Amino acid sequence: MKIHTGEKPFSCHICEYQCIYKSNLQSHMKIHTGEKPFLCHICKYQCIRKSNLQRHMNIHTGEKPFSCHICKYQCIHKSSLQTHMKMHTGEKSFSCHICKYQCIQKSILQTHMKIHTGEKPFSCNICEYKCITKSDLQRHMKIHTGEKPFSCHICKYQCIRKSNLQRHMKIHTGEKPFSCHICKYQCIRKSNLQRHMKIHTGEKPFSCHICKYQCIHKSNLQTHMKIHTGEKPFSCNICKYKSITKISLQTHVKTHN
Image (cartoon, rainbow, N blue to C red; front, side, top):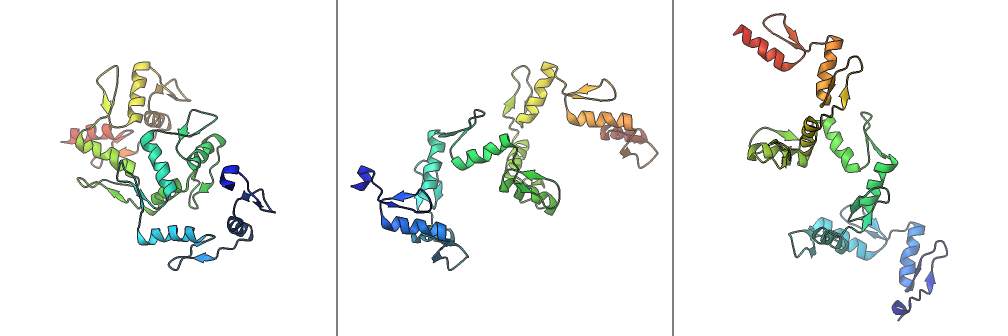
């Protein structure tokens, strides 16, 4: 009946925790004492409750007792399934108070908030790269190791991210999901469409600090700056010709043929 009355006769003398059952309080006190009496015999995992250990063991056995009735998703924890179901219902119960961002999980919102605070708790021990999430750091480290776990089954393309492979596959399928509403331009990436739209708006966000040159793409500005620096990284292996761009060199080489 205490569930219905809301009565919680057992309370923690260290924090504000209150509960109905004495056994729950005893389990709670282990948080303060650091005691973890339940151990996994396969790995070093330790926990306070037997039920937590039983759930943990599903990781080793591969058992996923909770499954989605809409798709093939399966998981170890009931809470994970409850979160997953929000993808199908479209429910986004957590929202950012600064921007319009909404998400399914509190932890995802907490990660998002670091965008606003500028906090980047994960840093690379090789270069100065810093990031918000551990997964981003793990992907970044593959740049240093040279690891490219995702590969195309049609060509020799390899990459660090699954999303990059998915975009690459559109080259083979011919799929161009992003299209311009003004002209017939179509492309694989949203970022390419955003750059293309600047042709129609006349926007040129990149400008030279030496002359009045302006352009749409950062890469174009980088190429332009070589005019001022005198840098000519592309050279002919037949004569002494050098050029700023690869395409200029390719045009020049044809003169030898």
